[in-house]
Image (tube, rainbow, N blue to C red):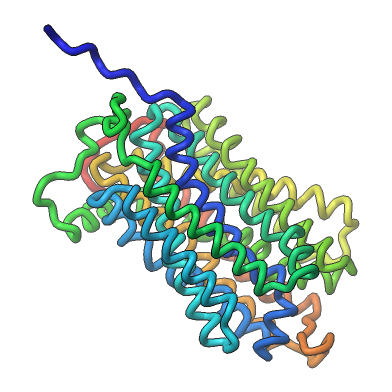
Length: 433
């Protein structure tokens, strides 16, 4: 007597498993954006300028980016459950180190630990999505992943500012440490790598299984052999950079200095930008799935983003209403960067999905890693000596020079997109090239 075929996993269970991985991504974005909201405290407490603050914030990106390829390889071999559990545990430790540090070096080490540990979340989430959800939902689920991260960034906006004012930034960071430790336990208890472990049918085809005996470097070389992956690695860095740099660090002091708003108001504005970015992910993903193409949505996002940032950074004194609108539009269209993962996944073999996602996410974060300290360096070079307490104040020309670095990258990415092969939203297993 034959056994009845396994049923696919119910959506509530799939979202529970995926959602616990998403919770670590939420925490990761909260930690990523935190320095933007407590710039005054950090500059005063550690007696640092813009370049050093940019470096402190970027310590997160240094280790985050460095972990992307190892994470892809580990997820392909160990499974998301083990990798996510380890990541949540180390993230809690890093948050404690950052919160308790009395030196710049100690705070930087805490940021390194946080970046390396939460760096596993996005790739592991995509791996879980490939197993727990139908392939037709992949772009939408990827967009929801970005939205989850943006909600974490919003939590590190005005709410963090109010909490830091009420309790101090160190106790707030320690509270986040406790929540991360709890998440670590829940992931180990509830997450499973594949629905088969719960008695359901997997959505991942057998072709997605790693080839026995395949070497790590062979898989890495194979993925990098695809032109689409190499191009999207660079393009995604330029697409994400303005959001990560402006929303994640320099937007708040820029808005406070040049638009005369309070720190809490500026944090609310950058939080709105990040939330719009998160909302734009599912919108752009669903639109791309609907029209059956990736490049038109991606190109439109790059072009509109370049135009909007040029307006904000090159034209001083915009009316606040117009500034709100432009930031919102930029956020929505920048959600198209999530299609980086779809293009790369559809251009490479499914058995290397984790490695492919790791490389794509590494490119996605490169802009923030390189340009947060680079903008700070430009600001310090052009500083006129103006101070507000123990914190430096930078004029509009200094910000314009620093932000111009991102406009150049955006434009280069738009030009390079011409050479990306359209995947038509279909999974392929082509030869490299």
